[in-house]
Amino acid sequence: LSHLSCFVMPRPSLLPLLLLLLLLLSLSTLSTVSAVVEEPPIPIWGGAMHYYVLVNMTDVADAPEQPYWQFDYYYDGARNVSRYEMHQGQHDEVCKGIHGAPPFGDPCNVIHALDGWLYLQYPTGNFCCKCSQHIGAIRYDWMRNGGTSYTGQSIVNGVKIDGWLKYGASDNHYYATTDAAQRPVQYMEHKNGQLKQWDFDLSTYAPGPQKDSLFTPPANCDKRWLSDVC
Image 1 (cartoon, rainbow, N blue to C red):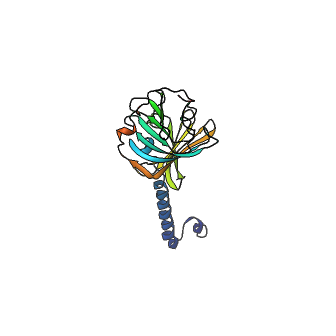
Image 2 (cartoon, rainbow, N blue to C red):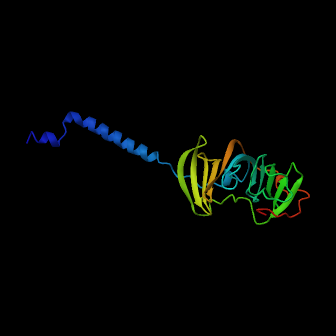
């Protein structure tokens, strides 16, 4: 029996080592559990109710011939208004196909105004038109009204992000910083199977109230024009 007992009972000198191993295993398990990422709250669009940011646009879906341009984006979610100031070289779907407008690619302002109308303004060509009451600004809470799932953490544009996905007409992916501010990093979808993507320039991101004049209907802009969108 003395020979068999050496296989079932540890030697007294080994007990401290076994206890240490058990302690280390317990600490490792606790560390693994604590490292699990807690799902953050679903953000609002842009991380704030009011802000300005420069956006780098990639739109293969609507402008495969010229998918890259920039725009200044002014947003007021509380009043459901926004303003896109498309830079030279833009090929935005809303700005194209307007009879009598300056050449496509010239700067174009897309204004979801305080009166509920969408206006298109070409600042360098002294041209403006009243487009539609049926195309509104992006809702600040579109991710919070159901159907949004958390996709975890990763790196986008060199920034650690939390990701969310919501299906509508397409797959809507939204990525925000992992801090409490949840600043916008990227929005991306596959519209009709083709990429449409906003990359937010965080160095320009400025949350805070925006001037009313940005969302006021432009002067001398009452004429209706037909276009691909209006």
